[in-house]
Length: 316
Image (cartoon, rainbow, N blue to C red; front, side, top):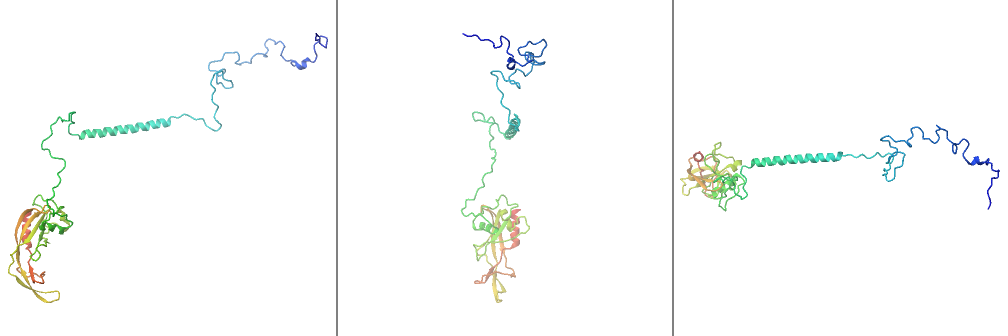
């Protein structure tokens, strides 16, 4: 067993200062009273109570680590990116639009309901289906009855005034004006001839009279007058001399006769009145005549003045 001895005979090693505290270092030396060494600087929070609201010692305070178990705040956003701010502008805008639409719907619904209730003049039926007010007897229907069509397979639809002559042939006109009263009615008149009893030609009479209707106004006509030739009513012929188209002299027998006038409802073909007999006088030879080249006969036309008087009497 060996003992360690100092090589300097118990004296302190003169080189020990090189490895220890530097000269003047307070380490290992007594600190005089009032020395700042070992004391916290003035205003230092170490060992002193912190004022209320001080961030030192609290979790998340800048420059101090959080306490154990305290939540760590998220890292700051990258440079140049502004922090996202929460905004409820879109939400409030949507709620405002929805409220406005709902108010409009409620207002429209209330208006419609008001008018529906206002137009309902009849009392509402009870649960059993009976109404508190008795139904009126004989009340007129709101819809007019359908117009009755003539029970005639020969009824036609007119497209012009010339089609109205079909009434004298036994065919009603489906689209003619309906007949209600002879007074003020519009009348067309047609006549046949001994040579062509099945052919009816229009007789335009009474221009500017109340019963007169123009050709274009055929749809306003509700009455048709038919002048039918009376068989065996021919009178003694009158000899009339003319020149034909070849400038040759010809003689034509101009014959008088009589016609029977009857009035018919244009829409139904029903006979609604008599106009009496209408003469077709052959007193003098007309300046222009249409005759049959085979028989060399021509028949006088019904008297225009007599037709006018008959129409005035029927429509007045």
